[in-house]
Length: 406
Ligand SMILES: *Cc1c(COP(=O)(O)O)cnc(C)c1O
Image 1 (cartoon, rainbow, N blue to C red):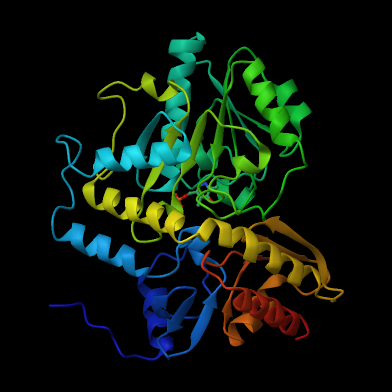
Image 2: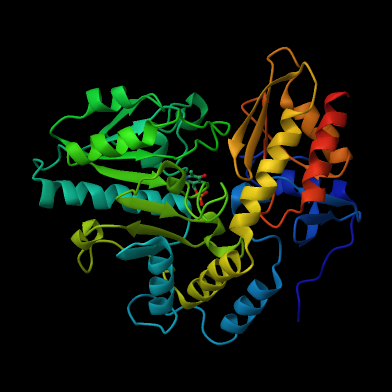
């Protein structure tokens, strides 16, 4: 027996969602029912090119057939054992993920926020046991405008008033510095600093790319001070910027790398903490865990998500088509545009403050068959699945040009 697809008008779905659901989102009023590659279809049969790709969780494209097959096969064999027992998918997932990313060890979790929380716990324990910081004194440095998820510890070190507002009191032990300012990092480090947590490109802040050379200096400062460099690649990772990991653009290696989102191609929440040193080794049996973390269904899906990303050339495609799309966006002549920025297929177009805001432009793009997300009122982010073709990229730029004209 299957769960019936309801044939109802869009307004009916929206009304029930609004009535019964917590209202912590304000989605565009499009009700999607099907997806394939870069396209999604709404309940009224309209087709859209998805320029958000579920915040980069769907890098491999919607309902990739090899992922569907991996998920269905594993779902009918074994889904969950808990880590109280071993399963036959986890070792291969570890091996393939570590070999691909050049890591010694991995810790499997589910959501991105859980990977971040796991990293925070790990670097604190490393600080006490290895670095020798006095118990309870560990400090972690983060950047303003960061986005690392929505748990209490994480929102406690956000610089966004709405993200924090009404949710305190918060966990202590965090210091905030401006993003892109290596001298500020140098100045903020104390003998109690255990880690610096940072995004290679700040995604939710509006695709903010740091100045050239920033991460080379960050790497040097962290090494010199025995501070763990934690790169949150949950959004930038797995091909989004045209490299497997965004750190490769900077010629550096993080000590801990966090991946999530596209690790499952959007099928299932799968995240991981990757360690290029023995830092993860501080976790002993019983220190940390997750009922679903490392389950066989997650592992099978993630293994295939990585396989298609590599075998089908999606990372190279993100670099090539991303460069073409960025050039096409830069070529739009419209006084509303303040800046076009980003790397690979992680792009954004920022509008001037007096241009009427990004949301109306996103509404007009929707009417033209393109789903984009406005960020921070004046920025339109463009991050389609990495299977985007050159023609489709040109189509996005043409649609934006037209939508900006009203
Ligand atoms: C999305 C995101 C997260 C949080 O991931 P969830 O799966 O939503 O918990 C953390 N860090 C970055 C950079 C992200 O983009």
